Image (cartoon, rainbow, N blue to C red; front, side):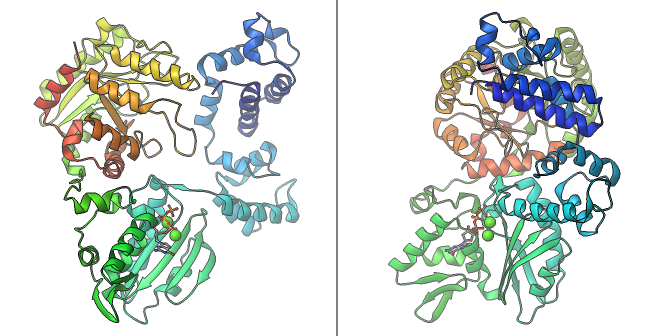
Length: 575
Ligand code: DGT
Ligand code: CA
Ligand code: CA
Ligand code: ZN
């Protein structure tokens, strides 16, 4: 994706909006708005103008400061000023800002006077009649805000698994505390482990007469009841998340669980197998004529059509039925198979805890090893390490390894892959390390060919160990950059290096599809937390779920290896 004038204008407008919310000097705000207008009015792509040697600072509305910003954006694909604002202003305010009719001026008032940080809080305040009291708002504006929020919610697409799970847990606990309820669990895409979910599907088994339906629709967080029947209801929570509830009696538990876990393609295949045997499968059971022959457990459903149990993460209609019949279902990776974590940050760069604290926290989670991989000093990453500071960090790791029992620290770095495929630190520095985690943090917009070659070339460096977050995607925020992942996977095999499955819920990169390709190619995947604090070390659970969707088994994953084997494998990446 080349950078167009519109991209730059848009970034300037975003800066202006965020500055205005922060209450910045109005002249600064106006400068960015004027800059956006000037850029849109140029009539010629900025890249070309610069190549022609045009002095942008002379263009009316741009000036010296913005000219420098334009160059920064064209060269790096980012604006530090915008990144900084994104860190300062609550991210959720931007969803408020996107509501038509709510410009930065009004958002600023809502934020500073009512403390509103997101749409949900705005809706609550509007329903409580607090918004109309603000200067410049009034009852009609308040009503319009509510209308827009409701319409917006219907368009709201998918939710991150990590976001949905927070809401799901409290709702499940609430339902479980209802008279007559035996079981309340999630089915649907959540149970299949998808990284985002369209809605939550809750299955409850309860004895007849349980008040669970009424309790569900009366749940505190429900903002709208879409449908309400005897065995089925659909509601929308205040954050916009839709929840479907199905209630069945306990003897249908397995059949219903299978039916509502899906996906559709998997369900259709299983139903066909049943038809071939003269059976009928629905959410209540497996039937031969009128007689129920299975359905209490999911296993009984599978067995009724001659299948072994198939894990929910595999139920995508992507060959799992065929594999099951061939006796070739994978024995899926489990969280406790992971022995270590090969990517994390400390307060030496942009993390929040020091090395010792990270080591102790990892040990408490049962990890046997942890690679310390702070950012290197490049493109102004806050407190990135240069060669000198890295050497001091290595000394500290040596000391800690002497002192700490039960966990081994690896000396590492997260080094930038530059545009030409070289690494941002010289090999004489990298060679001293146990692991070199390399990643793309700039120039996301290169063509597919150039982006792919850039990464292949980086892998050719004998110091390269592991490609972090290989596609750079940020779920619901940024598309993957355009690369030929198949070629990268093949090259990793040739070079004896590894690919990461980054466990941050917004990354989960590699995705399930590429995990499966890596496995088939014989390239080991490393499931890492990329933790920036002690708490995030447990994000590995998200990575494991994604890995399971990618059919990965214990032997397909680098950090299931005991430390001595890991060492050897990492040394193999050094020529
Ligand atoms: P999502 O919500 O878009 O992330 O994806 P799913 O897979 O959760 O889809 P959803 O919520 O529409 O349906 C949940 C599960 O229930 C789905 O995996 C298959 C099953 N299901 C839903 N409706 C039907 C239906 O009419 N027939 C059959 N056979 N299965 C259904
Ligand atoms: Ca669903
Ligand atoms: Ca659903
Ligand atoms: Zn990182």
